[in-house]
Image (cartoon, rainbow over all chains, first blue to last red; front, side):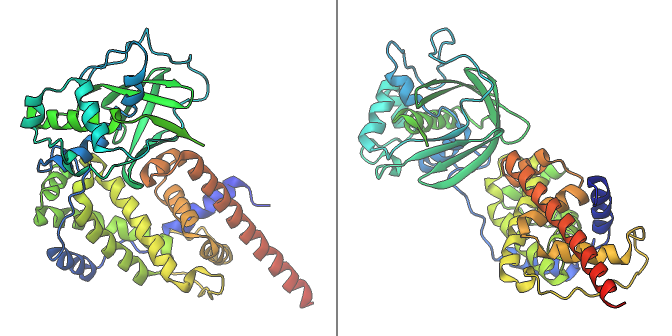
Length: 241
Length: 184
């Protein structure tokens, strides 16, 4: 019988042997190929590096926002005072069950397809002014190309948070539940976004309350806030079986 | 330094990316070769990884995570190579090790052949777990984060990989015992 210790030692020795050098011809071939390869700018590209256009902001916000996720339920919560982006769920009024050993966030949460009318309504409810929307280039008729409707999905594991838009994985990050109504998320061990959340039945409300990632400009932040509101406050997130 | 280079490369600076590729290439090759057990396929996986990394670099939000992100791309590329390869089935004839006196001198020839055979029978995701665990020295939690999989999945893959390797070694031992017994 091979013990675990013996197996560990054998495998450690086994992997010591092997190639440890990449041939120059391989590197050169890759670099040659890159010369003809255009970088892809995904919609969820990091805001601090990406050119700003509205659809892009949507993606970025979706990322950053891992975020404000289920703002919509918050909107519908009796007595809630939905403000603009960055508003928080008052800790004392959040209908959140007491923390349990099992992290209640774990699982998959989705919205259904959202319409342009719903998105405009969410923006209006969140208190964005016409001037703000105009300065950001928001077109109420087309909803920045989102008119066709976009469905969003969040997948929480023990430590990972994955965001999907229309079934496409857009971002994978890490998160940590701080208590029964707060979690933090980020790209790695740096959890720079803080959220408050509330779960009622199979409905999840998340509200971003702090984002310490430096932003490029106020205008960029406004675009993200608008996008986050549209994405996360247009429809509710429902737990999936 | 990497962070600055990554940020430059994210903005389209090919020279910065070339520096990154040169500094990370050997490590990528070492990992790929250990997963794939084939230098040619490992080179293909590394080349593919570098091209994909360049193309997708703007999507990397945290430049400090470049190394881990690159390794994730490499593992995915290795999976692709594995799917294209027939070398994953158990019909591979493992060439005898010629005992070049490398760093694994403590590992007997028999054991090394057994490990090689057992390893080649593993699915690529379990191979990657073993390489990240026993070559890179990462914990399942660290591997899970690096590969973008749940910790439970990482633990499970490692468990099954260890079990399969142990079974392969012990099955070989039994085969040898039977063979020797039959020759008497």
